[in-house]
Amino acid sequence: LDGDALPPDFIYGCATSAYQIEGAWNVDGKTPSIWDHFVHTEPTKDIITYDATGDVADDFYHTYPADLPLFRGALGVGTYDFTISWTRIMPAGRGQLNPAGLAFYRDVIRRSNSSGMSNICTLYHWDLPQSLQEEYGGWLNRKVVDDFRGYARAVFSALGDECSHWVTMNEPRTFCTEGYGPDPDNAPGIRSTFKEQYTCMHFALLAHAAAVDEFRIGGYKGKIGIKVDGGVSLPLNPASAADNAAAARTMDFEVGRDVAPLYTGDYPASVIASGALPLRFTPAEQALLKGSVDFIGLDFYTSQWVTATPHCTPSSDTYPECTDSFQQDPVTMIDIGRPTASDWNFDAPHATIYGGIKYMAETYNATNILISETGMGVLNETNMPLAQVLEDVDRIAWYRGVLTAMKQALDEGLPLTGFIPWSCIDNFEWTDGYNVRFGLINVAYNASGQGSQQRNPKLSGAYLKGVLTQGNPISPW
Ligand code: GCO
Image (cartoon, rainbow, N blue to C red; front, side, top):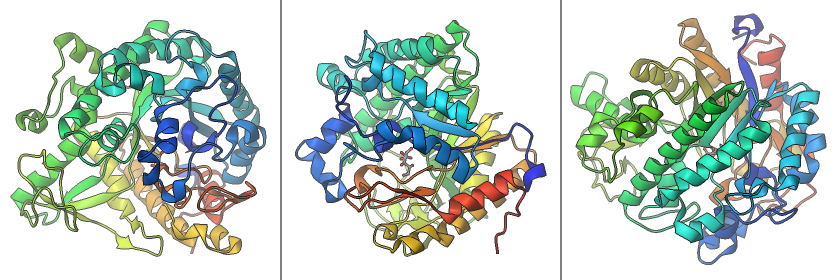
């Protein structure tokens, strides 16, 4: 993937999300989102490492005029991928727009452009207005589809032509399975059965389709799509038909659940057959969903081996893991990866990235695939001396694998159109607070988010810049 191996319009960007970086959670007319509520309220606040919150985060709401040129300069990115906070722009959840919120995002776009970056703009990265949660239960109520449509319409009419790509939402699978279910650890943190996870996903998919409908009715420039996540499942024994079937079924449940409706208008056959779905799409909804993406963003970080032989009961939460118990035939999932000093599994980048691209192209005939997030979270960076933090050779090794996998995909003619590492900068990593770092740029704060906020580019950022913009070889060693 040296400079001239890239297709001329290959996108190289970096990503952040509103709640994870902006701070300024209650200023200039912004009202609370479900994440503001989650981190401030007992008992859910106790889930977050060291009681961290996104109240200040990277203070990006105030520091963006300096941060944007830094992203461009240190990382060489041609695109800045950011997300819009619903309650900053529309404090009541519907209706009136907040001029201060709008002015902020307009200026982020203007300054991205003047720094040499286009924008990928996301409507929703997990921060539903708390008022809608309280009024009707948020993602569990069909009313959210209309409110999301209204929010999308308002944002598009204000900013619609200013982003090269629009993303309706980030990872419906994760915000639904972590926000609901027997053991929720993300906002809104409603303890429930698995059924609520499916209900949330169902309305999230319909909300996505409604937003795309608005975008297309409005005839805006640019492309629209969605970002999905999931692990890539491979058969533990490739020669075993049963393991292959188990891996395919696991992909259906982990990834196909959100992706199949976008391409076929309906859920995967194995998910339908499981009887787990509380809701199905009407023919009109199917028509709206089918073809509702110009591109598909893959937020892929992990992979696992799957074997049909159940080594554990579906309720077991110990290694090796069983899949969610709503799968009819439990399978055993084994992480692919080497435990590192980071305490995160250092997953196999080839299985994850090449495997993810190939899966989307082969299973859904996807034509325009973005690696819209991947990265390496490091736990120990919080306690290391700065010089050691900045010489992040473990993260470089991860990205070297990612780039090699993308190069193979491109060489084979798979429809990969861009790469957006997560993240431009250290930020609030949800339940891990500030204790796990994904940034290509370090922020000088401790594990609870206290510190000088100084920005320090890591070596991994210079490495990516070199390979993707300066023709350096993928192999740095
Ligand atoms: C997600 C989100 C990001 C995370 C990143 C690292 O996948 O959870 O899109 O907000 O920070 O993925 O975990």
